[in-house]
Length: 405
Image (cartoon, rainbow, N blue to C red; front, side, top):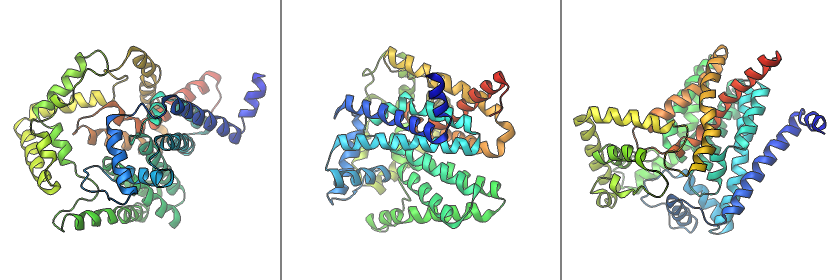
């Protein structure tokens, strides 16, 4: 029986059917278990923005990037304000992420690594858990994985359709979360390196800017031509992340034993609510002055914050969680992150290709260090951690059996 199953799975199409089927069923089961519940506080804001767009009220003055809100608006336009419809579509997006991870690993590394990466990503607890919520992580993981796969395919074939598709997907990823844009700037440089043609990275960058431009123009006219905001503004978030209260936030978490014990208000500046009510241009000016002033006056505190956030971002398990959640994290990401480090060094002979992943980890981490971080912000790039971990496992298996990938 086992031999028959193994023989059936040897065909790439059959393996993908199995991996994607397991991925979808696990996510759908979690969606059915949580029903319309299990939503984070942020989900309410996202749903309100999506519903406002769907009903013609517009995006308004929200400080969030527009990508996920417009995606929810599309869902609500078709299905009404249905939490279950959005969650089931999350299961579809999560399964597509598994497929894109497989194809990227196959192109950058080898087929055996791709299979391991797909299997691990399909069963990854964090990605399954966020399927049951209506925050942006599932959609962001999907759009990042689609954009990275497009970058890899463009490196193989820099045809116009690939250049255009890659730029559009990068633009959509940036409109979903602007912190990914520094990585994709590096990805354009990576394309130049791979193809030995400056034109490749440059044209992808042009299509990216063309994708973002309509939103930038919208902001310009929405704020009476007196304010330019390409995607979203960082200053409000930076103000809440560069202050004495932020120091307390990074310290207190280490002392708590379980979820629900950490009040958010005590970790925000005293005037946070009043500042949030200001018109966006005025709010940005105030927050920029306060945040940069605090950083300038407290370089030692800010350096300590960067260190704590790095540890927090790459922590093997969540500090504020139940025991079973920590155990699940240690059994997955707790193993994948160390294995990924090993996999990176084993993959050094293919550094010209895998440097794309290094650029992703370095830039995505660096940008997040300036803001209050939670472990869930790392989850959209975890498939690439899993990819390098899968390479370490593949190489270990191959060397054990002396069978090349």
